[in-house]
Length: 465
Image (cartoon, rainbow, N blue to C red; front, side):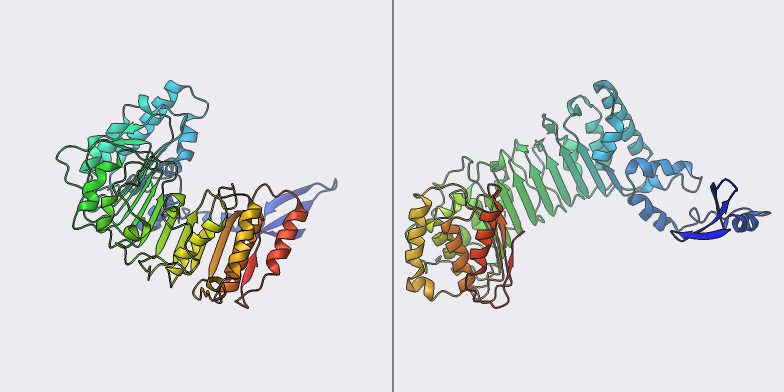
């Protein structure tokens, strides 16, 4: 007999005359001796209640509910879970292989029964509705929101991937203990006398239509709006003298009232991606006025909509009137390609930010040509590289640079050369190539040129993924 060790379990291997091996656990007989004459100890059922809850929180809700059949002790544990997560895995199990009517019936019955049997408070409710599910035919959805509104809900996440926006029921506005709200593809129609949430800290809205004035509350600190309409109804949120918003990101959303930014002195991060939207520039004079009301800002993300406010023919040494004394991270998205005008605007922002450490430019970097051909733009860059504005420029705080969608144009290479030569504190520069670079020889040639550029920082690392 031979003893074999595998995954910390011992097996005895007996070979018969025909050479066939049979495996028997070596410790099986020992376990039988311990269990004989006495009842086996159920160590899992004797775990502390809080530890059982932690175990179930790490299981999909469907599996957590099935633990009720293990024993009487486990029977009610899952009904006290504070987080109810109905994610894509849950829906996959509920709707796979079923027709539309059966999908609605199965999902409605399951979620309604879970909420009916749930005993404790619900601190988080997450509902992910896949594109193929007919949410508009699920009449119980409003009742789910009503049920959790009386359960001390703090985190509400409703991700609707169907083609039809879901009108949020008025019950949602009675969730006064709510701290985090995430909605996707919904319609917000607040009651007339709604005075705002008392504890809401963070709001994330994507593809949400707001139909009436709404105040999220005076404790709101973080707001993100992506592809939303009717955001003009958020004016009372910004006009409040108690505006505490510290992080604001607005992407591809219309009807911005630039007067909002008169009360944003507490902002730490601002992201505005508005190219392609119908927002008007008539009520905003320049970038100085916009950023002048944000003395504490340390993160800034802008696209070409705002870069065009900067003077196209200003010298390289030009700076904003407002010095961004606390800005540490600058993210830029430009659709016009890397040309001399773009380089000027980028360095205008960089030199207006004496503590800037991180620069990230994407995603259309190097794509498209607006101001003449690449050859003409590159020649202009070469001329300006010899100017005193460039020779004397030092970006002594810049530590990391990430340039995405690089195709290896002359303007891009001059821009990279300028950054390397002016940044004595640079730790790394990461260059992500563009998809059109198919030839390995071209890719190697770009890498060879960049690697030979002089660097102000002896420790700067070149990352070419």
